[in-house]
Length: 182
Image 1: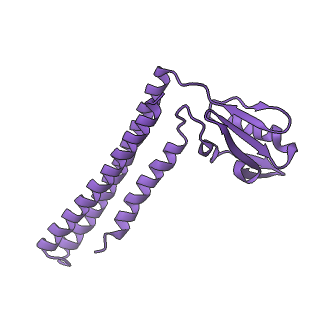
Image 2: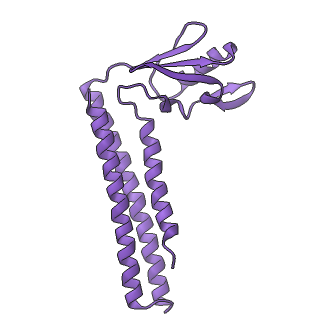
Image 3: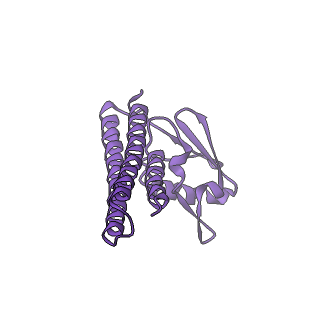
């Protein structure tokens, strides 16, 4: 039995968590929080990055410069409709998003959210471990592998699980520290 399928699934769980963490704002302007925003561009929903230049001129500001000035209203609407909680400032040519300084209470809420997402990723990794162990047990029951091979496979699966749970813990720790840093 090949374990690479399960390892890839565990890897995807960790990379999915990393993607989720890019959308959590930690007081600093990170252009990746705009990654999921779609703008109506001549009737076609398009990612914001494909219709505008996004830059970070200051630590707590994102500037969005649309290539087509007629899109400013649509970009504003898309940002307001998103769950970012930011109010765009429009000067007719570009849009500025200013990130307010996070309060201590808000930081603690964000850390709870970070931990919750981390726990969900751990559960996903453990579910993959369970699936892998079930597959090994099936093979052993069907006499396709010996008991020793079953034990070795289960040990490898556990090592993989430990490795990816450790990666999740590191991500949670890193993001929590980033959020709590003023």
